[in-house]
Length: 525
Image 1 (cartoon, rainbow, N blue to C red):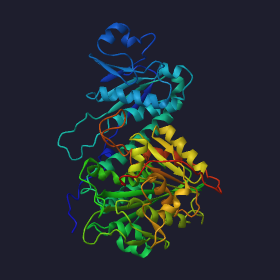
Image 2 (image 1 turned 45 degrees about the vertical axis):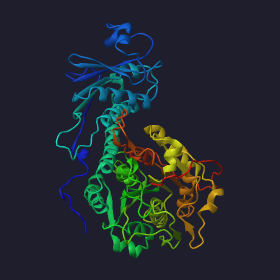
Image 3 (image 1 turned 90 degrees about the vertical axis):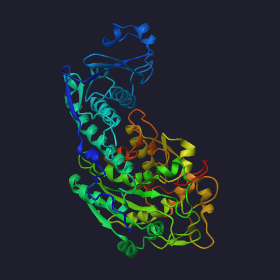
Image 4 (image 1 turned 30 degrees about the vertical axis):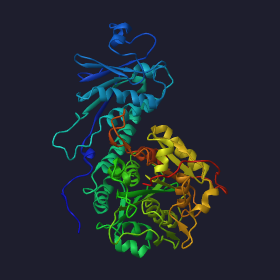
């Protein structure tokens, strides 16, 4: 039976919040706190010059990057260190503004003067304004839907000062900054929601409600529809659960689209590991985040209309929990994926690739845009513990069968400071996925876990240009870290939105990039 917590519970509270952004060449009036950027060397800015470096050093402030010192007064002044060279990139600006917003956590209105930064002539004002907005808004993100007392003062207003000549470019930056910050916050809301409050069924209901607000169309496939589609991967993972699975197809269709992009998101609403039960440790407790791929895909698509994306985009969200029970898929069972390929299940905790396989096949069959298959497919999943072991918690793994897709993903990662690192799609490991009873096994041995997972997924893309993002390591922040708030990071939502906004049809390549090494997939997600 399904346990209903509160049918009125809203898992996306951030959509009810909004931050006003004002941009002017005049000094802001009445902010609660204002930022003063201070390099570790050179002349001190006006807000700190009267104090002197010796006094600042005595207070422990050296001007190191993102170091802060509060100077009481009205308004509160927050010194923010910018290191030896000052702020040189949009990522550094995003971080510095985030450090300021966190330090001034009790202030509902913040002021940031970008005049001197833009006066250098090295900056695009729109990019600077966008980065500042993202830093402030995302740093002050909070998930308190289940708290009686909010843990953070809401950021009501951000006041940015720039020279009048930059006003037009700044307007563009304001729009993009607010849209992309909302996109990441939405993904965070969805992933932070406890699994009992956000089942696959509830997730589908949320998407059906929200999709029209953002110019999207949603079609939900229930268990019976999935049986008729032959989606054996998703159904097999769901077999041990009392909750029904859902596949949600989300479509964005601009007028006269100049291409078609498919996005596939892993939506394991909670991953116990199934029969291959995870140990009861901190990683097990974090498995509510195992649906972050699906959250990132949907959230990114809410930005497409406002960003003016000209490419048609179709999202496939593969949603279920993975639970142990008397009806659960067993080790040695064979599942039939959409399209007929069979998979022997050697580890039920390597379930993400099973649900993604159905989505990838369906994406390759989709000719709903100009009677053509997608020009490219990108999937995103919290897929392997190996990705975390290899790259830690700040960089996601990326693999691709097409260099143009890889390059576009890398450009989007650079723009958003959501770091990715390309691994080789090394086909020399393909034999490790062989099975004596089926076409494939869902795991492939002790080593090369990131690559093997991608090779498995690559079996289902039918030659379509394809990129794969393994975000297992980047799915959460254990504590507040600049613009990454504790809990779900929302990683991938902004990246995919920027990727779609700049998407260009790739040329189909005859050969994949090969060779390389990787870490062991010690604990699949």
